[in-house]
Image (cartoon, rainbow, N blue to C red):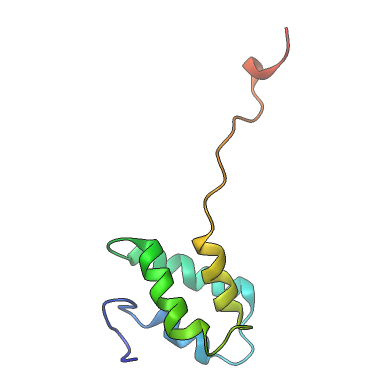
Length: 87
């Protein structure tokens, strides 16, 4: 992979796989930074990144973060507030 291609413009994901001892929390921060810069369908981009990196490093923390990024978002629900109390 050439650093800085259309899928990973700044090479953030690529570099995360090269960092020895990177933690899941650090991968989450890198993923968020990458996701905010993605143009187009994030889900398709994640799938392509998993195909590119995840197969060779299935136990890497970034692979776990990318897989979690493909999971459907939880349905939002209302929490608290004066209107939520039973009357």
